[in-house]
Every structure is written in structure tokens, then in C-alpha cells.
Length: 67
Image (cartoon, rainbow, N blue to C red; front, side, top):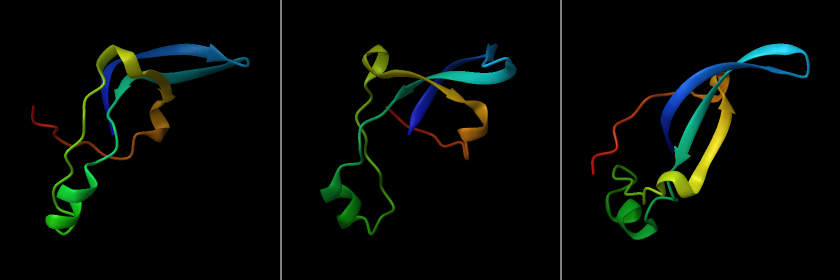
């Protein structure tokens, strides 16, 4: 899981690409995930310590992460 900070366009290997700067979350808490039968995914937000640039094509869904 990741939170999009912003989108931008850049050239990679001569090709124009649309990418996103994202801040990733840690893995879901396994105990809460098991106790909720896979319905509740509690993840730790890592903020600026876990920034990555990913292709927009890799974003497959949008969710809500409630603080």
C-alpha cells in the first residue's frame, strides 16, 4: 500500500512516462488480519522515510487509510 504524494511526467530511456511519487506503508499486522478474516488491514505509515517513484500503470486501486 502507498500514499500518492504527487504525479509527474518525465522521460525514461527516451520515452515519456507518467509516474507517481508515493510513500509506502508497512505490511499489514498479521494478527489483526487473521482475527478479522482478512477484512482489516492495519499498516504503519512510514512517511518520507519510504518514498518511491512508480509508474502510474502500477496503481491498480484506490483505498482509504484512516489515521
